[in-house]
Amino acid sequence: LGTLSTTSTSATSSTTPPVTPPDTLDLNNIQGDILSGLPKKTQLYIFFQIVDVTKFRADLARFVPLVKTVAGVLKDRQLIKEHKKKGHKTLIPLVGVNIAFSHLGFVKLGIDDSSLGPATDPFIIGQFKDSVQNLGDAGTQTASGLVPNWDPAFVQPLHGVILISGESHETLQKKKLEIECIFGVRTIQPSIFQVTSLRGDVRPGAESGHEHFGFLDGISNPAVIGFDKDPNPGPVSVNPGVIVTGYTGDPSQATRASWAVDGSFLVFRYLFQQVPEFNDFLRKNPIAFQDLTPEEGSDLLGARLVGRWKSGAPIDLSPFKNDPVLAVDPKRNNDFKFEGEINSQFRCPFAAHVRKTNPRNDLEALPPPVGPISVQKNRIMRRGVQFGPELTKEEKKTAKTECGRGLLFACYQTSITNGFQFLQKTWANNPKFPIGQTQPEEPGLDPLIGQGVRSMSGTDPNNEEKVISGMPDFIIPRGGEYFFSPSLKGLRETLA
Ligand code: HEM
Image 1: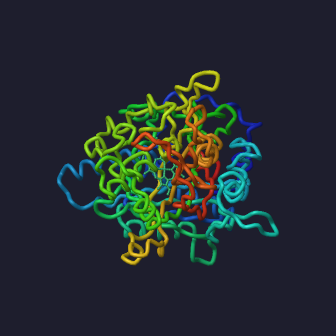
Image 2: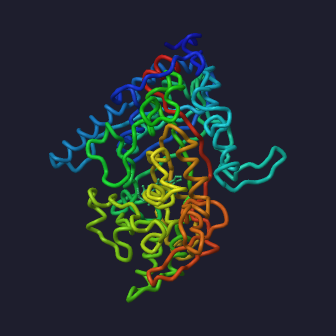
Image 3: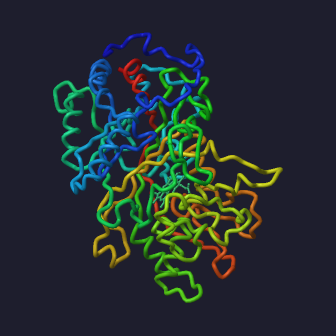
């Protein structure tokens, strides 16, 4: 530990024997955010470069005991439950720390990460290049090629990210200082340089759990078979290997280096949301239907862009009216498959965000020769937290964004090609997806995250085909990177 040993740095796909998938998930070896999500009211992402490799390895060995595993998170969640049961109003000061590395980070450390993917893999290319090549992010032509219009911090090489989650800013700050001491930040011999840090906070009051457009978020993450005791109903259960490397479902578990087992790719995206503009768009385009007021017509349009009402109720089950009881019923609010809608977008537009990013039965029940297509390998475990202030009075008045706000989007998967990149490139940005439907109009882009010429179609409640074209950009990507979140064993035995 702490030294650059040749055995620990020479793990390659060619020298490492094939990995036998373990029977059960090793919850003490997997970082907590991957399967459980670190409990959070507030969260800090610290993006860093390694400036002194030898010292970093020694420092990392002292840092690893701070890393919270899935088992640790489960214990914390139990404590939170008991604390609430006792009627305490205050939150327990709990903190969770995780760490992940980019391809450039592994290169800097001298670790061969070629078993994580070929030279063309998004992880190896890095998100900076992938953003303009594959994700559709807007860019500017420069002497060195097309570069994304990103925040300058994300234009610099990033070697890794440290994630701190907690119940208060004080707890977060204390842990941040402890971590800065470990890596010698602000001493004459630091081992890392903090490129930037971003803080996200769960929104206040009744908006807690809702993203900035106002929709309840984090409802339909996949249930991991063998981990989640009470799997979601509906087609949202996945083999553990879709999320954690080395298990059934991992597309390349047999060829990944042993140090990569129990790890997962972390995709981070810095996504700005144009909230006043989004609200203004809904206000100006209410759906006229029966006796709906203009305000209710705007809510209906919003629900049809997302695929759920702001309450979280899915429109596939409650197409024209919010159903607050359904919204909070975990047994029912995920139990839908767009069944009976394979060739129809009467209840839910094909392009609606949740239908684009998880088409459920649209592909599973597609008849031959095109279907059936399983989306199991295209599932991701979404994390993320809101950043930025609530709307100001001025912004509400002018319908123009003055303050930056949005989502620190994060998700885990064992293949970025099948996971995040596929969802963004092949589904969200593709106006022809989902395939196989027979509507006269093509579905159009995902109205939230789709990048490109933004239009979408839908059959409105009056059963008329409508196309919304010239939709403004509601979400603007301003940075990000692809990371790999190694196991505790990997951190101790190979990285440190
Ligand atoms: C679901 C908002 C970015 C993939 C949702 C839901 C909301 C939402 C409100 C419904 C709640 C739920 O099912 O949990 C947003 C916002 C984003 C954003 C505001 C950006 C600021 C993304 C990105 C991706 C993505 C970048 C991936 C490329 C998904 C998936 C679901 C989902 C897979 C679950 C669909 C389902 O299983 O029904 N999102 N999202 N989202 N989103 Fe996003």
